[in-house]
Length: 456
Image 1: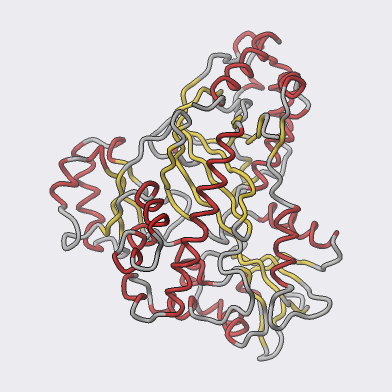
Image 2: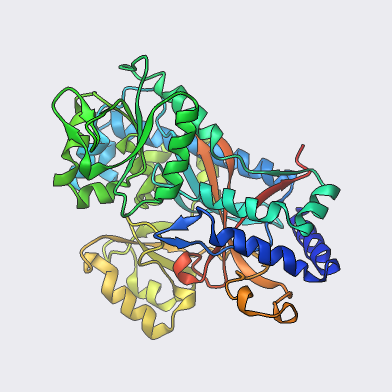
């Protein structure tokens, strides 16, 4: 049993003792409206109540995520080394080409966020999905934390406890620079770039990281992949300036979508004229087929007994939504046990939990997505009931309300914990919550600050 719920009750009690700390909530809301926590041109929704995690939670998250990182790296390395092992994955030939491009530095999986469902009563962990270099959320966590730090509720809680926020910026800059130094073709004064398709990316977050690199003495730009040029020797950005290393924020399904416009990047990586951190091999982890692969006998054969036990305990059953692989009639009949997802999308696009559907709607979804009928493969996965905690919904309408009308009663929200790993080291948590079975921004989801309490 963790102390997390006790900390949350104490946090609510402090706010109640401050007559709801409505002034603090208004100030936090005003801060967020003017913040850089922007995704697709919209400031993210957030809660006044942070997620408060104790030492036992920290140890569990650290141990499970770091052990999982080692397993994922083993799978990636086997894929790179063994052509026969690649057959357990169903990848577009272009993806396989990208995955097999040379890397030239030590780190197999430099940046990852592994999304988990944690039962805070038992500390049992189940995975939702794995994300590699396209992962974001660091700036959301940072800005939401800053919005709370000067409120009376936070200040009083911090007076009573040792409170520490997640540090997700300086640590990644250090990690990136360290990885680049292991690159076979590293240069003395490199110029870095954060690269994505900028109409798809979290650009404000990219710029914050670029500024930190520059403060360390490394020129760094934010660049759209489609605007890169390669002359066979040097990769350049839209301004014609050289790029020596890239933090890859573009996910591979976007590279496939913009294949022709992305050739400068692909050719430069193939020619080993730029360090791509992380490599396209991260797609092996990003693609939801990894859940199926982890249970495959070919994978179990090279994992240790302890690693296989961790997989069995944390990775839910996953299979292609395909009549040749699963009993579709059984999936139809037991809808509350399942969730269906595309193998290679992001942002909870086309993710459906049976528990949130009527029986008729569930049947329609099976008919729509099974056997590649939608044009892309889908998976079916055992549904994990998220852990619920007390929180406050976003104060989106607080500017229109009198103090007496501002909600103060807790609401029960589902939790999804994204655990950040910087080159295999656990670094912090992206805490998302939602009132519905699928936790995402499109499903009334929100983000909360993550604080470690009494962990030192």
